[in-house]
Length: 281
Image (tube, rainbow, N blue to C red; front, side):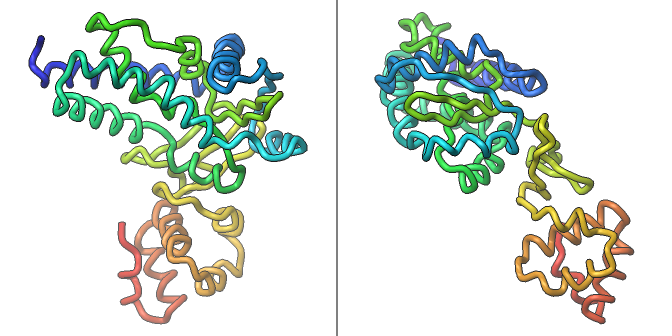
């Protein structure tokens, strides 16, 4: 068997290939065929339910109207079933090919790559606003591991059709007993650290015009953008109690107008320039 460093390098490349596939899917509509096949497997084989009616929304505005069915199936239930029936067999197969240290090295690298390249910040915020969303690509690192094991001659991975959800372009699934609503990947603007970020408008935008505002990975209220030119903006800054929002305002000013404007803004707000140190790059 090749040295572990070679295996890690191959795993890294495989993960990147999967990430590229998913990033390409973000700019395209959801593949309804892959979505239907993956959802059918999820419901009939994992949840033990009949195949549901599937609807695809274009963004958050349209998603709000689907709550007439009540609360979706608890996403923790789905994640638990997927882990037990899909992820665990993958990890069991890994024991046949790699020792514990090697498995941990491989899985850590795959997990790091998956988390760095995907919008965990966005999912966390959406989960707070609209609970029980299930993210198909939360299994990306395990699936990359499965790809590597397949090359080692392992047995076929169970629930293969379920994995088609990974490549369907689906960002979030909201599951009821008889209905599924699929939210596509949004267009996301990133900073150099792969955090959602934009100082000019929505960092996250769906096709229906809905979106979310982020500054270096921190969710921001819409008003700091909408009211930027308003006379009362300075007072809003002074009265703002959330440190992250104040920092976001200063970042907007910095990236739009430069550090000199930031300093003048703080001088006007606090009447002394030494308060500049509340902002750090």
